[in-house]
Length: 469
Image (cartoon, rainbow, N blue to C red; front, side, top):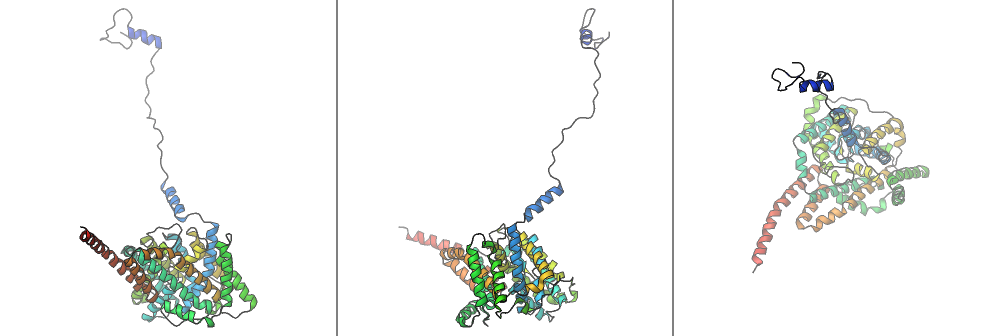
């Protein structure tokens, strides 16, 4: 039998039903099985695309406000960096260079986006002590490079040892007192340049009291011009973010036109046009500098610990952790090869950037790049900024930092006697002792306050139980 039926077919008759079906639809073509068709699978972004997006999200988009803020911060860095370096006995150029490469590297990696990493007065003085204790020349670029490199290494070790966890144990009350004390130090360190009266007292509170007592000896012309211009521009909505820059430029021009004899930034040392040369550390002096470098690193991190609580930009409130410490470490490791003094998070320079309208980390990046360009092209012109003008504006920034903490101080003082005692102890320690010791006082006061909390709770519960009928 033909067709699809066979010997076992159940069809009967002359024509099989299978033959009739085959005849009606024609010959059946053999089925050819090719490769199975698969729908395209949706794949997410590649590794390179995800990395690119992450970098863009981390850096943010630079704005005009960031460029303005970077310009103001760079101009401030010229006389302030030179002054800090000269006070500690270093070459003023080393203070300038500390605001270039460290500022760019620190802003690139810091979790607290608006933090500006550069030289501070406390870091400069501690660095001079470290070099003196090691018997090294503070004017030797290779010795400075060795110290800055070791400070970066110590910071990296502190991050590996989770030093940020210890800093997080500092309570809000203690950190408020610590930040207020640093702001007072900023004001006390600036009023001398602003009025040309330098008090001999080390205690910052006594320093300010003595400064007020000698008001008759102040040099007021340049300072008054800067304060007046800043006040007018600060009240104008469109000039608010440019108030610091306008005050600096206008007051400097007024001093130049009037011929008033005031010290200029160039009096701290010559500012030649050019970028720093590549400098290698002196590897043989590293063991001698290790204890001093650790002290400098502690002071720098102690100053930077209060910055995340003062900025209002895109920052992580855990900014005192490993990310910010590693950012400052990278800033020192990079600046060590370009004649920069040790650097750390600067509360005053961060305040300048924020007051000038900083929005993202690009403000700090622009400040370092613009400072390098300024030193390379117009160093002698930047040296003509009057020191009283920069001192007055730095004092204004310090006062603004204190004013920004007023509400927090009031809340802490109203929260109870324990927190009030903690903030007062920390504030007094910060204005009288080195910052590394002040940070230890803040940590000890915070721990004692936490231990006292359950004791107070038991005491209150016991009193309540006794008073019940």
